[in-house]
Image 1 (cartoon, rainbow, N blue to C red):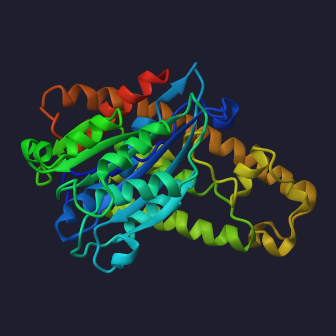
Image 2: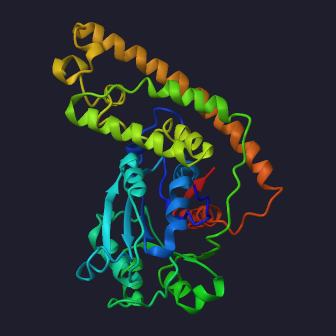
Image 3: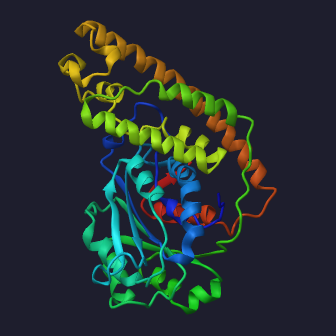
Length: 372
């Protein structure tokens, strides 16, 4: 397992940690993030770090609020610079469109592999700007992150026109150069950010990120397992999505203890939406009446229950989940304080997660978002 600091990507995401029951849809405001990752041969460290840090950054952005309320979050993922993707397609492809399904984004991320190629930054930026369903809301925060280590000028699409097109639609472009800062400036990565009201960052992709074990970690992990027992899939699509859910648990656990803890924390936020496959979330959000679900679409344990028994079973599970969520949130608050105190003893300004968090805060502040 490689713990390299190149985790820009995971500016991605954001499962906003706020009071349980507050719906992101209530505000009408959105944060949209598009993550463009170089998957050429030299970027193994970037991909590994993204995998290990995804839920950490998700939880940092989970603090986002506007006017005291929670904005909705959508994340898109692209890869570029891989030879196995045809030149006609610009050696790039969309992994996921803008989506609220963070497990789907995680699945796409863990499926990435590297392969030598040509990195066309202007082309992938334009593709994301034109190919994604960006919001037209003036108060919405729209950010594009692109990371790589080759000149920003490569390819048949001028990066300057692509970046100007992005900011013309209110999309901020943040650039992350994986290498020496001066080289990134010379190869126009900083210029790309400047053109689109963004932040330029340079990272040492060989720097290892130390895992700071917190006293709350073991209990959060234990509660995370308890939390998993409250998810009740229904329907063919539901069983498939629960399988994805379990795979992302396993992926996080395989990366590092911290990644597993961060995923448990992410799942207790109101932005982690499982209502499309989980009866508990669907009933809580009034998206379905459990008494109307066909017997063969229910898990075996519920199939012989009467309609009233099903409702009582789901109601009890909702109470159980909420109790676990509150415990995890309390522990995470304590954990954050501990980690913040430990980080003050070290210098970590050059790490990707620190750079991404700062750039998110800066861009968010201009739109009235706070991260506390």
